[in-house]
Length: 342
Image (cartoon, rainbow, N blue to C red; front, side, top):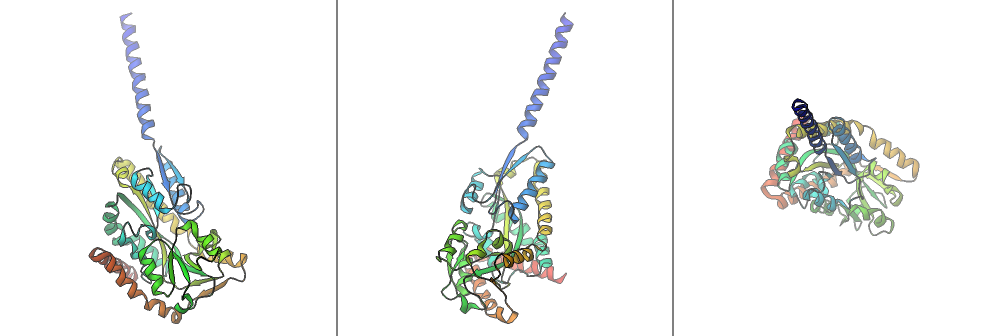
């Protein structure tokens, strides 16, 4: 009888251990929240979906995705990410410019290449992105996972644009970004900072008469419905950044840190491939939906006065950010030179 009791005790202990282990496993299978600035079917949403797939395929964790509007505007989701309510956030430097002034470097016109191959190579190898910016984001409680381009920026306006004179007195919507304000001042417009949720209505009611975004975003959000001309000046490419709450990231196990960084890299490669031909397809859709849309690709000669404004904006950037900003700008130029030399 004593032997049976002993066996029973061992079995009970073993079952308890299994239960405890099961409980630990369950506790470790966390649910992570990830918000971004676009719809699920737009570029940021496609990246986030791939990231989610990679995390869930290689762990017991779950990733909940929150597209634009579900948790508020861009400022709201950044606050939630910094507070740890969100574990991941995707936000353009256009909205983090006041938080991380150096991130405004992506709005210096004619800095980034228009050639997609060179552009993608830059985002892969850039020391400015993968080293310099890491510390700047960390100072704001954020772990920078990656940055990636979303497409050449196009202007949509009520009237065709062939030079700065055509932007005179045009109230042009810009993101809440001080340097982007300076860019459109230099381009001859009247920059008007507005959160994204107010843009369509602002164009519809003529509170603003222009805005800029990648063509795929213009098509998916139907901005062409409330503007009549689309202009390609080659001045920029929309950049976005994927971040984690730093306290959350630093608290992960080594295995989970690797899981997150690997998922980020896989999604990065995926989104660059996904975007091949995306902007051309989007423009074709816009033309089909609105045949009278005036599409203008500025010639090199027409771009000259816009390019002439770039040094003024660059000087403003350095004035705003000091030595730290100049170091970032110099490193980006060195990175771009390295890409071009290859």
